[in-house]
Image (tube, rainbow, N blue to C red):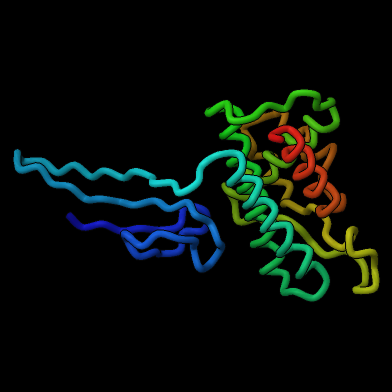
Length: 197
């Protein structure tokens, strides 16, 4: 049976049957596609995911890795790399949300309205970026500018308008659009770490 494997986080092709981290992004999550044929006049194609580490811990690790990369390249790194790292952080948040909402891996107990609103805004940013070719962030100010303030949220308005969730659209516009990226991502990382401790 022919099999193919790819990284679930970034899509990099991987070798089937060889465990370990993705060389491109470090994720342990992989999707293995197995083609199966049944000889009754039809073909059945099945894809299933094999996850090395699935759960809130893996999502926190992915978010932490994306933030470490962003911290390293915020000032001098190519803007394309900054976009990719920011999208990886947003994907980690999306995976954490799936773990919370679908698999009940953790809860947002004790989170206030501002924190819940920030979370919804980040989910909106992820969904808008995922379903469009919109950039996610832009650089702000000269290189000597405060590094925490160098990146600003900047999704195209039509990408935000296309969001199905009115809550995500409202919270992105109210809490993220044009504001500094790094402090918000660091705040969410700390919130999730406390919620899963």
